[in-house]
Image (cartoon, rainbow, N blue to C red):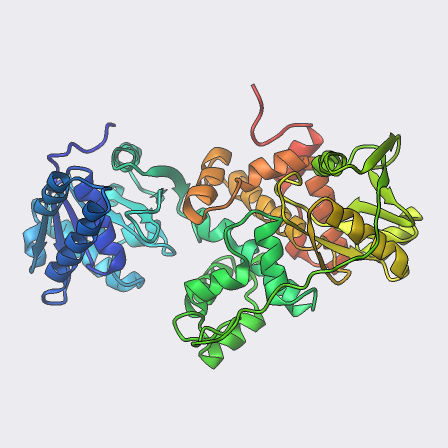
Length: 507
């Protein structure tokens, strides 16, 4: 089914930041839009706010004056829900309460024509449950925008058990016509983004709990090595810990206490203390006036190194070898098991085992483990950890080599999988399970994580680059280290790895 015609009236219920943003998107898409809010004057106030925002775009030369006037002219604030009777699509963006939304939807079904599509912007409630009270359940579909709606590209088009596939396709095409990047998702807890993103927060929170490093260092590694725009602690401070913790609890409860989604006691303590992040002035960081952000820990070295030996392939870390060669380090290559030697030190990409365990099992003295980087040719920082028996001279030689390549080096405690690698492995694992359980396709899941939460790369594409057998081995090692089901590899991940396949097969 094609997109809704621009002559179709779109109604938005809820004139808060999200509802107003959705109304703006629909008006920019060429539709007449009615905006309603139960609070007297709220809809008109929201339209005035949209007008001001668009006016600023005109001042900056990003929007023409005529386009601005046309968009605002298509926005009509209304003061009664009865004014929405002629709508072709109604999108509700009200409070996240199942019964309140159900009552509204039943009222809309009685008010609007049988052909009117009813959509919910819910981020966490079941579309199937929302439709349960309707006589015509097929018209109920999820249309989950991301905040701020005019700027964020992603829209999750969510199908409940009874959603009409023809109408689902219509909303998908409508979102595309509005300049968005829609993805199909099945109505399961968290849909795609709020489910697959849980490990991004959970692994950093766990590493902090275990004393792997401080917040500033962990955040810096996620940014400077992993390529994410923000680390987990600065991002949760921005979102608000009350909001982020509530979503985690909701997903955890919805999956019957699956340990993969277990909330963090550290974050609960912040919520209990009212330290909600930026909006309260305190979170993991201090946002009061004059407060200084702590710097990440960085290792220095006065040692000069001019040569190293590479044994076998370093896999995804191979660009590091080229980077060393480009700054004048003499690189000697020979057969081996993927090791990098400099002086007394042996460097290896972490495989999910503790450094002390790997040193013992593989017979490697002076072992220093390297964390994952999105791109070893461009990363500005790298995390390392070393086995307890590694001598100070070897540690210094390893740091000197990495600094020679232009990398800032941050130390981590000897924890399994370090920071970036275990985070990416868990994101890929959750994405794989979402594909396996038919929540969404591999391409939609990768798109959702890039367009919805600005990941530098889709987690399944990243897993393909690392190699699925390697990701499975990393997860097995994490599971063995902790003795927990949290790190169990997805059956789909194991199956594709065993078959020598990838999530995205190359042509």
